[in-house]
Amino acid sequence: MSLLEVDNLSVNYGAIEAIRGCSLRVEQGEIVTLIGGNGAGKSTTLRTISGLLTPKNGTIRFDGQTIHGRPPHAITQSGLIHVPEGRGIFANLTVEENLMLGAYSRNNLRDILEDREMALSLFPRVRERLKQAAGTLSGGEQQMLAIARALLARPKLLMLDEPSLGLAPQIVQTIFQVIRQINRTGATILLVEQNAAMALQVAHRAYVIEVGSIEMEGPAAELAASDEVRKAYLGAH
Image 1 (spheres, one colour):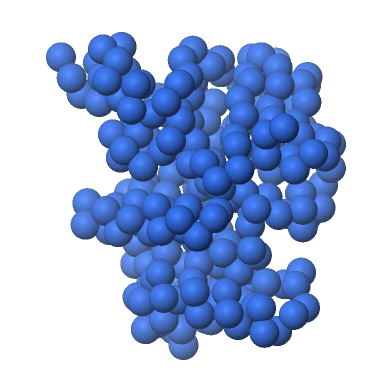
Image 2 (cartoon, rainbow, N blue to C red; image 1 turned 90 degrees about the vertical axis):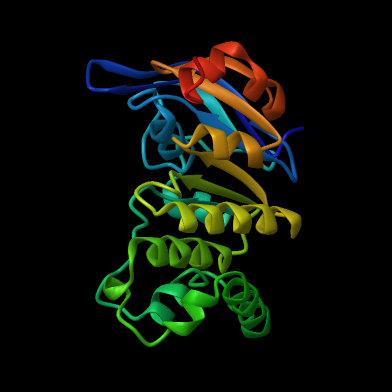
C-alpha cells in the first residue's frame, strides 16, 4: 500500500474540467515530482489532495485512510502538510510566531522544540530573523519560513507547490538542497515545480501532467533523458 494513492481524480472549476482521470501514487520515503506547463493542473491536484478543492470523481487515500471529502484541517492533522504556492505567510506576525503556528495541533513541548531546532538548522537565515515581522523578509526567506513552519507539523507527507517560483538562482539551489536533506531525515515529499530540470534532479519518480491528464510517468532520471520531456520542459532542441 502506497503512502498516498490518487485514483481516477477529476476536478471541475464550474463547467471547466481542470483535472481528468488523474492517478498517481507516492511511496513512503520518496520524492515524487509532478511537472507540466502553466495551467496543466499541477496546483489543482495538490489543492484537491489537501482538501481545499472537492473532486468531481475519484478517490484519494493517505496512510491507509480515504481522505477526499474530509476538511483541510483534518487532513493536515493526519500528517499531510501542504506548503502552497505563494507561501501563506502571516506578514504582521513575527518569524517566530509564524514558525510556531506549524505546531498548533501538537502538545509535546520537548518534541516541538526538537523539531524547531532541526528546522532552524536547515534554514540559518530564518534563525537570524526570528524577531522580525515576516512581511519584511525577502521572497526566498519567506519560502524558507514556509517550509520550516511545515516541518514543525511533523509531516508524514510534505507537499510543496512551486517552492522555487520567483526566486534568485542561488536561493533556488539552497531550497533544493534542503528538500534533499528533509527527505534524508525520512520525510516523504510530493513536489510541484515549474523548474523541471531541478525537480527531476532531486526526485526519485516523476509524473508529467498536460491539460489535466497524466501523460507520462516513471523514474525521474528516465524522464529527464526522454526526448519528449527534454524538448517540452528542459529547453532541449
